[in-house]
Length: 295
Image (cartoon, rainbow, N blue to C red):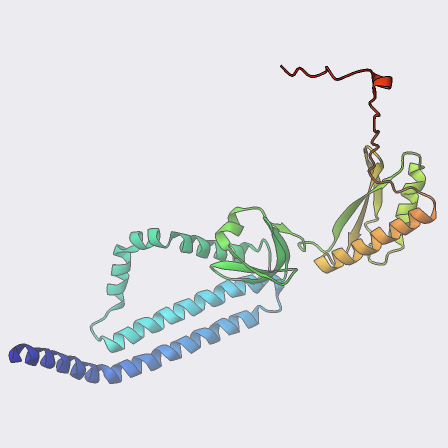
């Protein structure tokens, strides 16, 4: 029993002695890795700063900055391991990674897909930071494009994190892709109203709104002969095309059209339904007590 305890104590003592011997190397390795880490962050910031004022190179700068940062940190890790373990060679780790690469690929397939999709999004630039996009049921402003996911801020103040592989393989609507954006709204007038007169009044109302562009000019089109109204579609352009400008112009255009039409006696009908109650009596309809078979 004493021999076993002595063997355990000797083993623990040997581990402590070995750690004490390696302690200077571990401290030096941590210092070297910290230096590489801060150098990597500095390189990333420098690359981003160089491309900050160039809109078309901004995403490319993000890609290059992150790749440079990752490569520098990886090199620092190799150097630190070489200091702690002098027999360690980078080739050994690369060979090990090569052997287990297939297993790692299957295990981290989704992560790798999102990473590659993020790189392609940053390079091809279907949208950029501060663009306003619509993806499935989500709509908002792009806050950040990372190599794994893209974050957008919705108009009601929520943050949505979308995997890059989803964005890369599905359709996206970019509302701010161009300088101008066209909006539309359907207005119903009565069947007894003069269509040409109503269209002219709608155009005048839209021209009176400062947010509506004169070029391209707004227009009005008869779209439908509905059950209770003649539906006319008004279309106008705004610049800039952001959500706040959309709502502001929409509010002013609809208000101006409604006021203009009412002032000029144009009817704005709404769906109505007439219900007739039938007074069923024996004197008027006869005896219907035998209508249903009770057998």
